[in-house]
Image 1 (cartoon, each protein chain N blue to C red):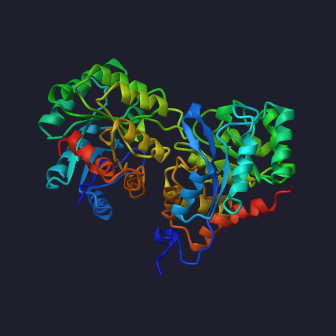
Image 2 (cartoon, rainbow over the protein chains, first blue to last red):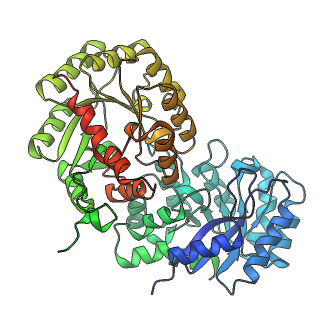
Length: 248
Length: 263
């Protein structure tokens, strides 16, 4: 049986009105036959990410390995790096999540570097909510990957949101230039883009992300399960790549 | 008896034909696209979809001077499976008008495709409005690429809908990733606007659209072959529509539009 890993799920109440609690996430995982889920705090209505990260860590620690968590910080804040370190060391979270669209910063901002340092030193991955115009376009994320060649960076949303696919050349170039970059499948325009990346660069550069509750994970998982790839390629996207990147 | 592909993914038994209202044919090496008609027909077969509206990836006048003939030959090769639209560039007033006439009168194509990202022709500029009015004279629908980019957002295309109320405008992708709310609001405001589901990634928003503007103005499409028709069809099925609503969205709405075209 192939292990399925949903590498992107948001947890807790959201400032933007699309929250999801632990039992809801567990039910979703069961319904989709997902074995492991990577949970991330949603942007909380009170703007305070510290208790939100603690809630993710608590759910992860009680999940018997079914859920792992990432620490989410706002690099605009001076305590971002401290909070990353605490998330990794004290909360046992597996990596860092940055959302330039919701916390509003450019991923190329020098303040991001300080937040990434603890992950770089600890060999932990960094997931970036990617594809947000001006903030986290593929080549902007790639520039961060250039600074930390030994750290794996994961671009959500296939690295681009354009529904003509106009950002996909940049995504392909970014993946070609930086082997420490990986993309997630959430909301990707054109299934043949994923198939081209898989055949050209390898399915180990792609991982499934359901994106719940912002995206419909029951639909998103079909992008992986119905991909026109051999069984090995589908297995990598569905769980193999995420297992490697997150050390599952 | 084994269920057909459509039934296997949840289409009610005996539902009848499904029509994909936006797909592509064409061979554009510069874009890395090699999509002869056999490719989309094969994907339609895989998904249990009967027919598809097809158009090229580039405009006329433009990169491929034989684009209209390419679509016409694709339809001639698969007359029971493919329906043609002409994809035109509004800035070339005389040529675009001639191509539209040739497409609809000579080749019996059923609509006009406008992609303002490619042409940089703003939907509300006079060149675009002239071509939209001409399409309306044929009672041919105008399929707009409608996403998140400048020139293509729902509120931009809404100006054209307001200025040419006799035209039927289809918002392809119904606003993309971040403009879906606006697409539904525009459709509420303008009765000559139809929403089309391709590539937009949120099944629940199809249900929202149907509940707010009615199933009579929402149409299924895939934007295939790059976006797989089978996956796009599953998205519509996840929207939780009634069988009656599905008949409109998956078939009857596009059939009604095509039936109205004056050749």
